[in-house]
Image 1 (cartoon, rainbow, N blue to C red):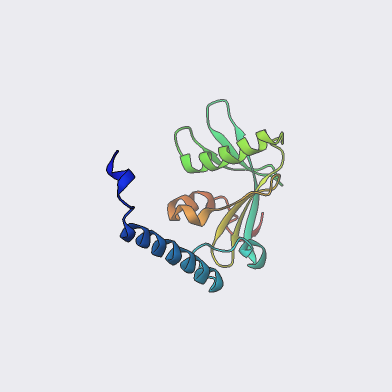
Image 2 (cartoon, rainbow, N blue to C red):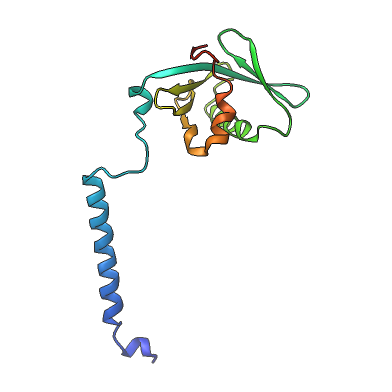
Length: 155
């Protein structure tokens, strides 16, 4: 027979675990009731006015680069050279993978929108997925922002 079989479980440890569970539940409840959150509401995209947007298409080129086009005019507005712009490539690759899983082609554009608040969003118009580019820092946000029309408004 071992000590586990003969000695009772320490009451202090049980008490501490119980207090920790109670504090966690109360804390979650209070933050829920007070609506304390560091996450921006998803509805901001629909309630905050869009000051500039463009519908983008991405086309792989034979040399490994990616042509970025305005989907409405077909005009090429940028090029992602091989080994450069890894953040843009990664984001678009993730969205394209989601489209492939859903058997959606490449024709529907991706909508890049800047809100009056300054937040930047990339929306897959085919799946409805929205990526808040603010969450990835200023440099990565700026990588996408260069595709917005210089005069603001809709391209």
